[in-house]
Image 1 (tube, rainbow, N blue to C red):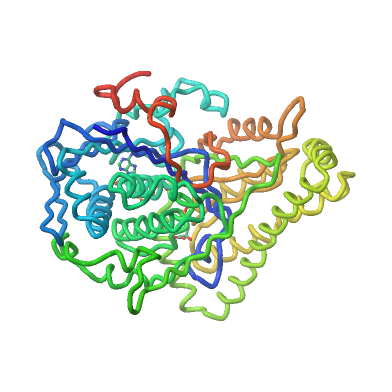
Image 2 (cartoon, rainbow, N blue to C red; image 1 turned 90 degrees about the horizontal axis):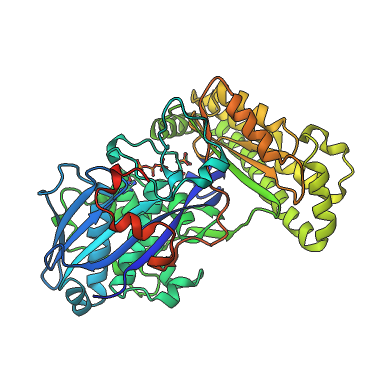
Length: 502
Ligand SMILES: Nc1ncnc2c1ncn2[C@@H]1O[C@H](COP(=O)(O)OP(=O)(O)OP(=O)(O)O)[C@@H](O)[C@H]1O
Ligand SMILES: C[C@@](O)(CCOP(=O)(O)O)CC(=O)O
């Protein structure tokens, strides 16, 4: 029995570029969150050779068993329906494609790894799912969230859980795919650890393929990209690269023979090799600026919103072009302003810290007149008010509630607080989340974050709960040590964990 392999991948927040990022002519600013998804892969005697048991212990009934057949060329992963009637398409697709890919590198290693049973355990940080509480218990705060045990059992099935929009499926797929590639020796620990390695690109391409097939559509892929590479300015890949695979329909037997290596591995030469054109420009939020997220109890359907926006855009190409370039300009402005704050910090750290201290006592409407050195202008520009207005124009034109009225109210009240740079609705927008950037001075009696939390707890129109996540400083997917991740071993080894009270 070998050591368990553990890979974690972060959740995401698309701060700017919703809808635009679907088009490779535009980009999006995606921040990877400190909340992570973990996959543990280890040998097990609990299932026979050539079988894989996948479990998500936080959920009731979340166990799936698969058999793997291999004839030297074809790989077929089939679900054994003896344990649970619930299928998990995301997990099944991850196994089918990653194992097929692994078999193309070394049939010997493939057979050797599967000469005993495998167990895969998938576990998400608390932020990925709305934490249900007794109606009488006090509202959640960032302080109370940080005292909660990690990987809380959710006491529901996966079908019944409420997600928070942090990209559970992209983080799940990225961590499963990467852990399997490591287990089968397709990528090496040393290479995978490097942010710019070809092994990491291979994990990215594979995770994008699996995610698109499981979702039944090719989205922009910003969520998988952030799960692999961390925060960045993302420009999407040309969907043509996946077209031949997306065209194959029917059951997995039709895929079992397709060769994936030339499409997914950047280092394998091939005639007419499809090119992955996505671009990743690394990004980090400036020092003493904190990302804060709230889970808002509303409900929006991203696919329906995307369909409507795309329909309007194709019927109104001229208006859309003008609007898209206005929004793109404010998105670029946001990125530039945030980058210039990071430069100012490097150039004069003391002055920057003093300015943050001063600005944290004033609402942004008074920043322009504040005596806070060069920090004031980029901080004001980072929250270009035109941004929300032009996104709202997109919503009005396409008949989509990108920033519904209660969200506008919540954002306006939050942004009016001293020390709040700005905010918006992430990703496709709608009714279920907001993000803010707040100043986090070193010494202060009342931090801007506390003021924001007060606004959220007093907000009547919607239930608003903070999430714990900030920006992840660990860039993207990461190899972990099983016994060093707090709470992981307990979640993996405790029986009936989903219904336990921790
Ligand atoms: N802990 C988990 N274990 C196994 N599968 C999971 C887990 N969490 C999510 N999934 C898979 O991901 C699917 C949800 O994917 P979907 O694309 O609908 O959500 P999402 O857009 O990633 O959600 P969100 O962004 O709100 O987290 C589930 O149906 C399940 O197949
Ligand atoms: C609307 C879109 O641009 C962003 C959706 O983001 P989110 O799932 O709402 O975080 C779709 C996409 O990029 O795939």
